[in-house]
Image (tube, rainbow, N blue to C red; front, side, top):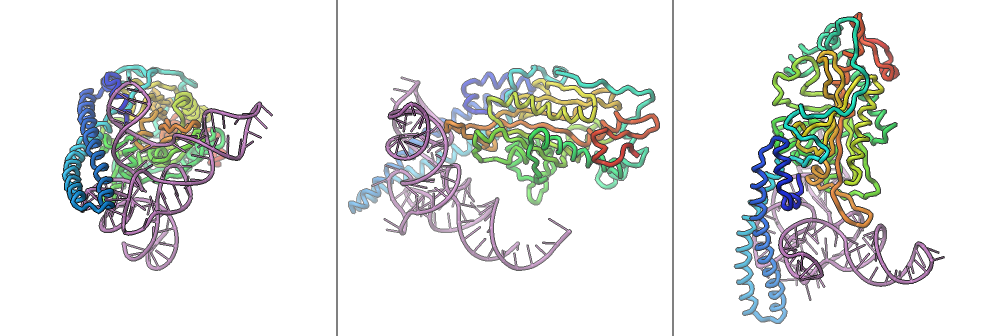
Length: 424
RNA sequence: GGAGGCGUAGCCUAAUUGGCUAAGGCGUCGGCCUUGAAAGCCGAUGGGGUGCAAGCCCCGUGUGGGUUCGAGUCCCACCGCCUCCGCCA
């Protein structure tokens, strides 16, 4: 949710933002019109309520004086005002709800450091690490490597669940589990995160607070009977952990890490990444979330990105970091870095982590605030990032660590976790 | 799933048969005092509207409705927590 007061003061800022993101900017004027109406109604209702409060007091006084005629007269007047209030309140509620529905569809304001452009071609590469793997032989894609050794089963997954699901067996399944463990260990032991185990089903409000709803309902799996949603990322439970709470400035920043499966319908991605396990309806992810203050949130974002990068460095996987342009950024983000890992099957870099500062956008929706040392209460800034997408990390290892004989070497740091050095 | 109980501000706790400003304590912040601190004293400590401002007004007792001139208090629904029973990996 954007700040309505800032919108009143600087509507052009938001119109520009909408345009830069490729949204319809007309919604801003609609919101402002409704806002004006709302303020007028609010003033009117408030005045009437003040009058009613006055009458109520007079009734109490008249009763004490046992002036029955006066009591009758006042009650009559009070009834009249009450009726008027009811009418105006109903109007006000309607306008308010209408405005809320519009506001929930306005994306976050991009930070000034974000490149302006309509799509990913305006993204800016920030840095590269490592050099793309070179092979003395013709490297295979993971969708050939896995099935060849009978460890990745896409056909049977299709039988059970349809397209965009996979089954892993034996050493590959073990490697997936080891990656989760390795990432959690790194972030908790070396980067100071607190491990959290979260629910995978959440309420509609929870999805709304973190920004997935109402705009992206098509993207989420929903259990009709209870109106619960399967989380598309652990970001959802993590950024709502302190909804409605007032945190202390001294306890910030709070750094959380959670492993969870992620469930996504991938409704708008037909024909994209159809082979293998790069884009599945269910995948594992280790997610990093920060609760922090406005003064330091952008420095903290850099730290968060470096924590995600560290995973790739330890695994010795080549990657690059991209600063997303306004047109390519997600709805809730003010600024986003993507980390892309080198995938031989794509002969290019592929997204493996997305790290964003949402500033107060999500916190405003979930009413997550903190009390400053001087007593002032303010919304926290919320950061989130993958550290990393586990399935894609597995893919990257398979493809980058493959050997001429078709086997896959296990990255050094993972050997203690899995207890073997080569797959199969 | 069934029965009962509970939900007040950052925290803890009050509020007559519905009636003046939700009382009090703790914590936090600011000020006075002090060489510094503690103690003590004074003030502030949820959201919104309006106004250049001082200020004025409204809302806020888990959430949403209802009854009433007037609701923390009465009624309904929902959410959450606790206790017990049932079921269950």
